[in-house]
Figure: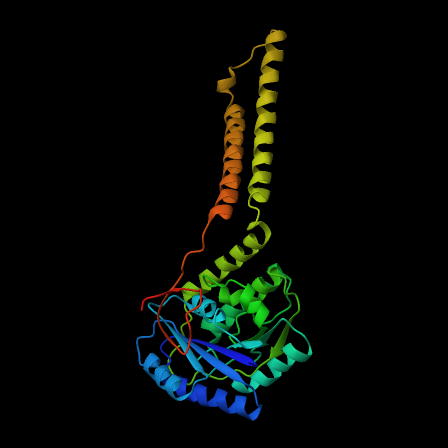
Length: 328
């Protein structure tokens, strides 16, 4: 199969039929073999019923329905376990991503051998204060910390080699930083393409202040895990060693000075009356706790089992993969 198109959605009943028709027209005109995987992230409107109707009439339409609203990252994670195409496309269901961009994205993956190509909505039609400004702050911070020279990390329209999506674990709000996750997983050839942004035709944006805050926290998490996620002792052991050595050296100095003053018969306060003694003691205790945290982190890494982060209520034209637990 040439292409798998993944479309996560939440309450997008009005746009689904139009989006499917648009995608199908582009796929047929370019003679691609394809599948479309819709992931209903707990919609409360008629989205699932419409997707069910599409899947009955069009075998290339496949779908997952979540029991609750688990978020876009979980939707992508579930779909990535089911894709079969050589090239995987992700796009939003709100018609703001233009399917006409897909052939060029596929060409860049196949002919220029990119691992991942991210869209860049250079000209946007969103609210400047509510979405454009936060997006610029996200992207500036992500560029600075990741070293990737992308302008729009959060663009929903992306293309991937199938090897990338099978080896990247997307969770939390990490869908914003999939290029960073891909780079950390060893897929370093990451490109960008300017894509056309469509104004939202139906419904309202799901972007809110909570996502703005969570996005920055997730960026910090990504960079921390990339450096120390596999060996937490490298961080906590270093901090513990520094704190313990500092505290021990200070305690040794206080003790030696006390003995010297007694030897020289000079007046000297009790060690326990010296505030620096308690600072030194605290440093040694904190250092020991950092060591303990590092050991516990190593033990957890070696014994943990990945939990099911979402429950799938129903599937269409799919055999359930390993991503979640079915309620059927």
